[in-house]
Image (cartoon, rainbow, N blue to C red; front, side, top):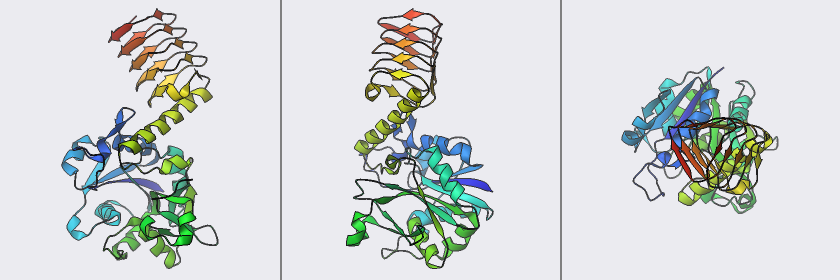
Length: 335
C-alpha cells in the first residue's frame, strides 16, 4: 500500500515573537519544516504540504519533492479542514501519514511504527502517543479496555480523573485513505465550531472502527514547540540523539553534553572528540582522529589519523595524518 505524507503548515499562531513563520525557524542548520519533510521522505511516495496563513512565505521554501495545496478558511477552521484541503489529492488505496511542520523531534522509527499499524483491515487509523512525566498542557489519549484508542481528550476539557493520565497525544496520525475519504466530509465540529483531526479519532471509534495506539520511541518526541525555549529544548534533544548514535558507532565523546552535532555528520571509529566542538552538516571525519576543544567543521572532510586544535574549517578537505592548528581558519582549502 502506497503512503502519502501530509504536513500541516496552515496555522497562524506564532508565539516565537517573530515575523517569520514558525515552521521556518531553524534547529541544527535546517528549518523545522525541512527537518520534518526529510524525515518523512524515505517513508512516503508523495509528500503534500498544506499551506494557509503563511503560504506566500512558506511556498518558496518547500523542498522540490513536495507538493502543496492551500486551505480555504472560509470553509471552516481546524486541522481537519486542513486535511480536507488535500483530500482531492489522496487516493482511497493509500495510507496517509499526518503530521505538522513543527514536529522535528519525531523519529523516523516512530513514523514507521505508525505506518505499520494501519494495515487496512484491523485498524483504519493509528495515533502516536508518548508517556510523559509532565503531561500538563497536552491532550491525553484515552484507551478502551482492549488497549485501542477510544478518544483524545483536549487539555482544556479534561475531567479530574483524566488529568493524571500520562499518555499524551503527539498530534501525529496515520489513516487509511479509504477511512479518511469516507469519514472526513461528515465529521462534526466541536462546541467552538472548530474541526480538529483529533476529534475524528473519537468519532471513528464511536461507530465501531478500531484505532491503534503506537508509542513513540522516546517521550521527548511528543514535545510541543510553542516558543523559543521549546525550540532550544528540542535542539538539545536531537543533538543528544546524534551524539548517542556516534558513541554507539565507536566514537569517543569526552563530554557529549557540550558537543554540538548536526545531522548528516559521519565520524570514523576510535576518533576522540573533546568538549566545545561543533560538527555541522555535510562533515565527514575519518577514523582515529583527535579534535581538541574549539573546533568547528562545516561541509568539511577529514581523513584518518588527523589531529585538529582550535580549527574552523568550511568547505575544506584535511588529509589523513595531518596536524592542523592551533588557531587555524580554512575556507575552501585543501591541506
